Length: 274
View 1 (cartoon, rainbow, N blue to C red):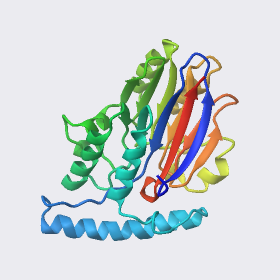
View 2 (view 1 turned 180 degrees about the horizontal axis):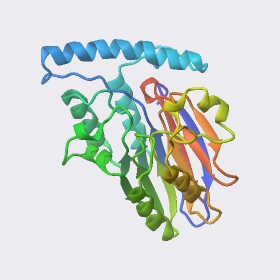
View 3 (view 1 turned 90 degrees about the vertical axis):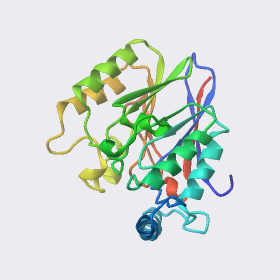
């Protein structure tokens, strides 16, 4: 896996047997295949070129490398990340796996999910409007407001926050899941701004944060309060969207781990438990 940029984190959690979770995000697949029309192929090629420039911009802006491994085709990066995830106990994909949800993007995404041999959760990114997502496929999990992967003594809860808001129904579901006391990892696309990451995230603009913006619904603050309550069983919050790594504290006991862009081969591995 020398072509990937792997960051490793240890999260000690009493009462949970050690597990490794592989987390990646923002691959922005711009795929075409033998089923693509000429027009679809041409659009994919144009988008691919655009993302070469965009990923280089994000990388250079944050001092990340831009060598041949980082500039590889998005489909190759996805395959590399899936292969790494198969060495873990579970995988978390925090959105923008596809760029425009074309038929070929759907086929490529589903192929990767089919190749995953471990439990996974996948949530919507802002590039993945739910009305364009198919039913009856692995990636259909993205249509769920709240999704759950049960790993026995640990659960992964996926939250759809692509519109930078939490609904009352999502809050009710999350309250019920946390009321069980089971240790929980929360996964979502858009990060929360907090005292530690304020400068880095706030400077990106309102589009890149889930809270502290004009018109922010009160449910978002209730959501934060649920995550950070002293007796909350949430042990980690996993996000994407920023296209640079950002790890910060939401409270004195809870970290938010933002992974950098998967399109350049960035990935997090978390060892959770004792």
